[in-house]
Amino acid sequence: MKIGIPKGLLYNNYHPFFITFFSELGAEIITSVDTNKDILNEGVKYCIDEACLPIKIFHGHVSSIKDKCDIMLIPRIMQLHKREYICPKFCGLPEMILNSIENMPSTINEPIYASSEMKLYEWALNAGKRITKDRRKINSAFNKSMNVQNDHIIGINDSNYEINVALTGHPYNIYDDYINMNIVKKLNRLGIGVITEEFTDEKIKNSEVKKLFKKPFWTFARNNYGFSVSSAKNTSINGIIYISSFNCGIDSVTVELIKYEIENFPFLLLKIDEQTGEAGLNTRIEAFADLLERRYQYENNISSHG
Image 1 (cartoon, rainbow, N blue to C red):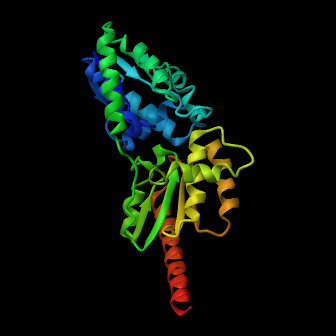
Image 2 (image 1 turned 135 degrees about the vertical axis):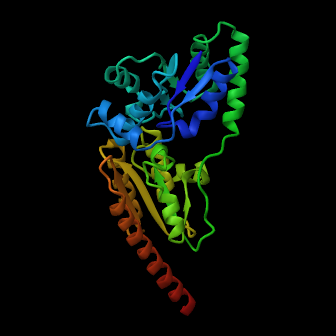
Image 3 (image 1 turned 90 degrees about the horizontal axis):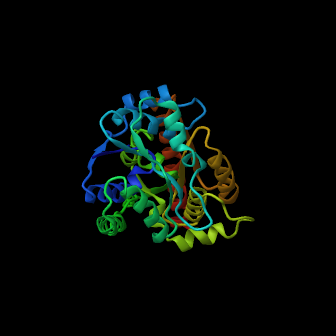
């Protein structure tokens, strides 16, 4: 049995769980290659124009391996925390794929509620039965995959620079180097360190979120808001860069809330889609780097003469 796992959307965050689980059940894992121009072009061909770039790219990943596997995993991730939901595009992801791409293999697309281990186990039990009827084997595979996932560390914290930025946005924009055009390497070359939200304590992020009139309904909105606002108060952070997909409704609200709260703190919004040119992105990053450097030198001169 060959299980296809596309390297799109939240693959970077949760691939240890999925790969370990299906491997332990005896399946052969077929993954797509890292995102590249061919994957993007394939996704644009199949996906609706109104979808955001990560969804288009996911279509490309699926198309690239659909003829190489017996079953395709399309993770319909609904919930990671109680009383919060993931971006709405995940809710209808399987339907988008199956309606757009012809000759698809059988799919595993049941909703994934990961707000508790019990709920996640219910999904694993149903998915595992597609491979084996041996419940003990499924239980063992689930336990091992949970352990491997818990040991999986993501995030960027190369803050050994004089100037550092908080890099925020949906995970698939932060951790797909093709989507963000290797922004971390670009910033490092400009002498700027990068920190992501995984290295900020949940209590600190949530303390900022609690000040809002209403708690965000979406997990990524809560994370990005809490991380950005707390970063503006962190003396080791000199600026914020927010990577957002064009047409992202959640980000359009979250970004405005952040900008209102942080006031004059340096903030750069990078909106990306399949038309985004690297030259233009480089120019904006370099200009922001210059701004941060001038501000850093000014503040240090003031403090050294104070």
